Length: 369
Image 1 (cartoon, one colour):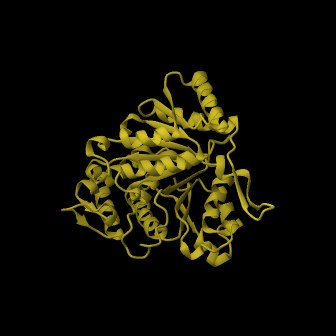
Image 2 (tube, one colour):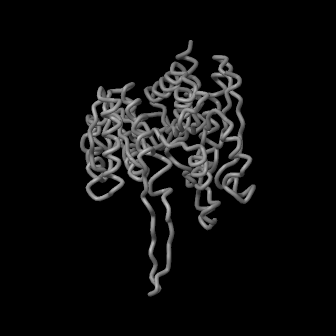
Image 3 (spheres, helix red, strand yellow):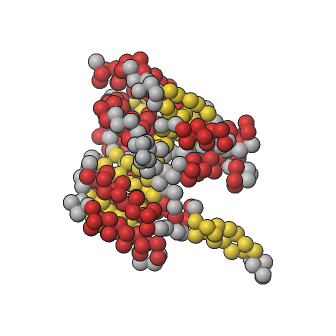
């Protein structure tokens, strides 16, 4: 595995703190399992802007193209609110997603047994919850053109964002969703707004055709996005895999995140298409963002970043046993009542970011003994 390359882009806010703990897990696998990667670290987001005047340099973009997987932290913060849109911190991440065509965003919403009571919903509704939301990531309203604000003749303004999808963009997202479902509970719910949006009509039509042609063994249902939002808080365990567009996926995955007790617990993977050499570009990041209000205080929860590395092992390098070990270590730490402030519960042991990293490493060593 020494020739496998990982580009580490820790970013801003709590990104470097959380990524640092994930890199301790990388080091553990190198020393205890002889599982070594070639690591390269670079700047992205606000830190890149401060150093280079742009959120992602061409040189860093080239490294992203050439690496086997990207371990990403987080970007953004109020420090850069006045920066031009084309160089602001978030644009660096969007550029990577678009350039590498990372169209499939996998966002699991899993409730660890020890955190079932931390959810804002009743324990019986979320206990055992295991949802995978597949958000199409490179199309839709975030990338559609025209995208502009214009001044009208009367001095008022008009804003336009264009929601655009093609058959191919929907087809490839659907294929990933159905393939995932076959390895889970074999159910896919396709979500859109076909009652009011033409892109929703096409989305439902294409997903249905892909299902009929190649995946009739998988159970397929359709749901409108507003109804799905309601059902996620009414009866979330009815879902297995949800596949949806960029905008609805953004909102629904954050809603599902809170079912688990804390967005600080949730990893994600953004995957591209497999090329002729069997290589698939991929980026792995926690869902929680840069959280600048707590950056540098040593209180951030690194578990989502560590679990993102677990997803990297699973989806980029087909190391399922090692990924299972990472997830088991996190579960063991939570079972012991070890908590960072965001998931703190009465009677539990509150630890720092470093303390949580220590606990995960201890659990890994015990499980591997």
